Length: 332
Image (cartoon, rainbow, N blue to C red):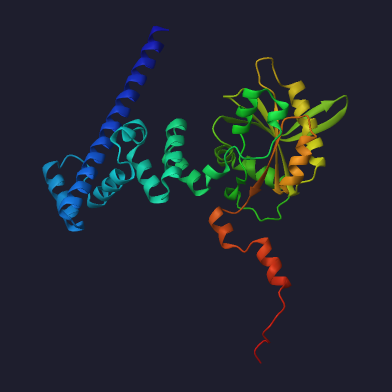
């Protein structure tokens, strides 16, 4: 036991030391960038001066990496994006330099950049995970799925359950066509379970697919069953490849009640359901949820990345094009 405790202390000390080194490095880079900004304002330094400064620093400190011309431009951008040194220490200084360059390259709006920085620090996102969440517009999708959690769960618990949701879920990693069948979608999610868990969010653990329950001789199968290890609750996920229908909630509610009765333990929070549909009318969803007493959230899913979707014409555009009479005769 003493050895295990000593090992834990050593690991914690190493981690703390690494974080301090990282914070000091970011502060150094911020200081260099701030100096560059000040001198440019005072003397009108051009890009050639930054190049010469990079050469001078590399010559003076040959053992140190990070003094390339490109990196000095990043230092200048960091000082411009976060002019307050205290803010750099409290938030940005907790991120590796590679994360910071991603934030600068991918995000122009300060408020959104701050959101991703805070989430990366809080959840310990790797650089790849950070890039994934930025690419899929996580800031606009988290916690926004329509649900009846507020009406069916205690106040504090309903807020936690809502944090488990997104809308829409981006499943472009499955590489499936839009007309894929439900079983194909389920199997693809399981085959790419690491990507699936990343999209669902931190804390989800996979329990099983087509989980079997025997109810007095009748067989029932839950599409996908997960357990959230931080909130200590089961999450039942049902997939529908078509548009949302109110009757889907009855089926999912039955599965939630089944899992709650058969698997949930006294230390677990209430089981919740999440219905993923290809399309939904939010007004119909709200009316349907209001009449349902089982804690359920409803979200759509996309099989295309946001950039591809943005390039495609909307349903309204297509309808307008079809309804617009042709005014020009085809060339002869």
